[in-house]
Length: 480
Image (cartoon, rainbow, N blue to C red; front, side):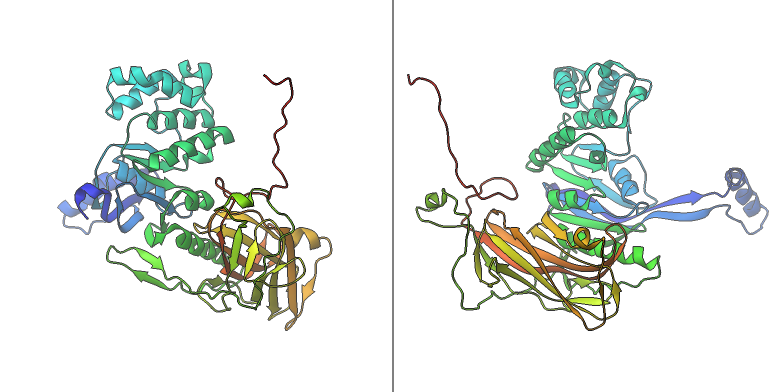
């Protein structure tokens, strides 16, 4: 890959900070080690080393969208500051190719005593935009930020949401080649967040985006690739869906370990390509074949005849449940999920369904130990891992919780109307937990337990659709 095709190249990056127990130790560190060495004594450091980033290497290609995830203190913000040039690394080096626009910590780059107008010109000049260009773009910046008369007030009077509005608006108008965002979209109202997301999707078609967020759904939605940092080290680098799933499973296990509970996380089968990217190995499933080929449907969309000139439906081809013990599974192990099936409203399994009808998603489980207050649930995801919908049994049974004895089996039915889905592949995660909605331990979570594929859809936009009973136009008034 040529240098022109690489936007960011990070090699052996490390950043060390010196942690002092008390302010006086800083003065001691400035003077005493030098005196000790001059007098032939063994020098002594008055600080503890803290490596915020340690031995991190990766490359981001031009036009790529990369997410960075990790808990607080994992080194994400430090890494971004080094890439942007606001921090110097202790070890290693960073190469960037193109103009960088960055939204780092709240208000970074703003002078709090300056007005919003003055900070627009200050920030723009720092990005390398001429004053005349900034004047031409100023009105557009103000309209995008939509902070009204506050543009002429000192930014120290701004709310956190107003800070982000102005900072994002400036970054969106500097013709950046590389856009770096660190949790900026977690602040602000939904209207502005949607405006930012529309801009980011447009930017993806022409630039390189590095996106840091604790919102793993947003990372999965935006990013094709994700890097997971922990303790300053790179734990995983690969397709966003697989990395996010493994990260969430690991964090759940760590949280429960603090409470003395053990949650096992089998290693994900992976392969590393020539560029060093870690990729989860695909699992193979076979289509259900129970001799049934009919397509039950209790709602018929009147537009079906328009698809390819024939009466096609939103066909859903269902594949078999992945057996327990595969690598896409984690949990404490007090119970296991033994089967996941998709049935029609009459309890019949089919290898093909039509979107829009009532279905019965059945999750079968077995208890290996006594479990108080079991919770069984599911998620339906698209091929990128975005959560489309799901539910669990907690609210139905929380006032009169059940208990399960070793060897007992539960068969849980979720009956709902299957939405219309765009053409593509989908999967169902199934989970068995114990506890409450807010505080529970996953006993068995199976990623991609059931796979199905949607074809011949009436849907053209959005993530999910609803079956239309009818579409009509009523016209009133005299004809002309």
